[in-house]
Length: 419
Ligand SMILES: *Cc1c(COP(=O)(O)O)cnc(C)c1O
Ligand SMILES: [Zn+2]
Image (cartoon, rainbow, N blue to C red):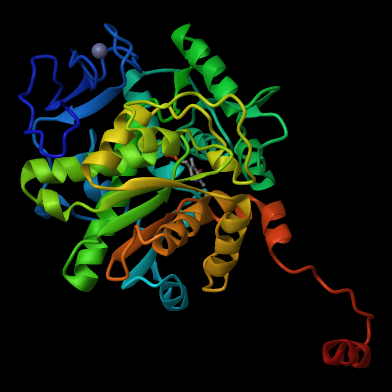
């Protein structure tokens, strides 16, 4: 099976362009990477993956941010703002409260538009230029549309975004609007938006930049590469476990792919690969269901609900790539309640790390797995926080304390403080 952790480096096929090609994860069909627009396999409709004849080693990396890792990417450089090089925060109080040996927070909210989606977009928009397509489009719970709008603007291209009506956090729509995307609000959920934009893409109307697009995941691999490099610099080892929120499971797939390619090149031993641990909201947990039942794909949940709108997804398109990643690394998946998510959001904020609700799911999931004894006290863990606090100001107001009205008078303010 092509998604095994120890799968050997593939032979370069004749369709390859400069050592890069597309391969179907289901039937193995191979395609030229940049000749035609293609999102899934022509033969069996399976998911496609970008493959390389020469997987990267540590010595190949040079520079800063996503493009430091261009030896693991299809191009030398892209349409950049620039992105990546996000902080790996220490959180000593939270580490002690949860009870693990090491806890670090990889805060992807510090990317240019405030989420990790920028890492995928810098590569995806570069590929769009290579293909010579006109209009870029995505379905989005919000952050993909913000990233697409900004990178599309940067690249001088037209952008179209489809959002579920009334379910997108204020900060995200504001970004898409100001970066001048054309915004269509669909009377349906994210999964319905994705169905429609996939139809538009199939009819040649738009170039699809959802995480079904295999090139976006290439950029998102760099999260895993940054974590491993920085963690190794600080501790001389790699983390035992990486815990991340799961929506469409693009990141889970991307991190797994990054690690597989390092194992292929010999840069990393298979037993050094961190356990990929996915967290979903209880009201939108098809991946957790699939992991618990040992399935190779998820079953679509038609009704999904959670205040963590970025992971309010019932049909994770990348599940067939992500489920082997969770299994092969010895990881797991867990669901958490909205209350647990809000509590984790407050705990992160108390360490100075401001995140949106979906991001806090990783910390909530870690706490739950530690309490259940699935995660041990001797573990070194990295939690991924995927988006910035300001993305969802309403959720932040709700989780935080209310402002206190006071009179316009110093003595009255002092009286109020003494109360
Ligand atoms: C997109 C997104 C997710 C979900 O990531 P997947 O790769 O689709 O699993 C989680 N959190 C935030 C903030 C996001 O924007
Ligand atoms: Zn196929």
